[in-house]
Length: 103
Image (tube, rainbow, N blue to C red):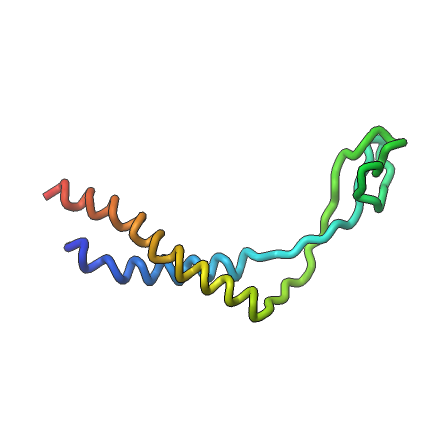
């Protein structure tokens, strides 16, 4: 199998997978509360949160429904167009070198 035949299909597949990955893994998180070292709950996230309770043991966030604006989708498309072909070449060049070495 020739490496040249794999070039554009690989670049297109990697580009599409990059866009799908960006679209599906984007989540928005917002601060909900802190759990203090002694178990108390604080709804403050500032510098003094849990100061009388031994400090912060854990910050708890909650995910909110992701909504995409036209700007978000435009940024995803731009990133995909820039880095998709680059990733395709990065994946394809080592494969081509391995295939050509085995000849």
